[in-house]
Amino acid sequence: MVEKSEITVCITAVQAARFQLRDRQHRAEKVAYALELEGEGLSRREARLEVARVQADWWPPAEELVAASLRRRLAEEDVAGPWEPLTEEEELGMELSGRWPGPNIGRLRQRHYSLPSDLVKHLRTASWRLSEGAFAELDRLGIRRAIGTPARLRNERERLVALLCSPAQIVREALDWYPKGASGDRMGPHLMEIH
Image (spheres, rainbow, N blue to C red):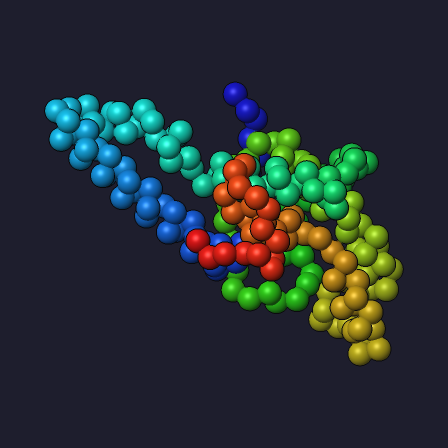
């Protein structure tokens, strides 16, 4: 049994809509398959049991798609590592982290996923190691929070915030670049298609 960890991230409204559409399609396909099986002579109960038996293979849950997409994204050179392991304090901080500083990128939807623990650890480690220098400079200047940032430091704050790479950002990239999870080619932002 794979050990799982809970993680909360914000995905875009478009990504959330894709998951809703996927869920509706899966429900319709399950009903159609059960009806097909009944037409072949299976009882309603037998048809439902067969659908339940093949469900994980034919209609995997969204978390499996997220995990597969994220594995592929974390294999990309810019986030793959190797990284220095997080200290206990850093790891705790990443588990507690809320919204990171950054621009408003539009309408986001909060989602909770139960993903393989090794994947969550890699995500959090890559995110922190890519961002720790910018966070250190934001803290040194006392401008981590936008509120109260002196006008003379706003441009510097924007520059440093642009260097941050939150776990949610990596997940959103994974879902955009690898919308089909383990299958399919990479789709960069300029190649994305609406599903």
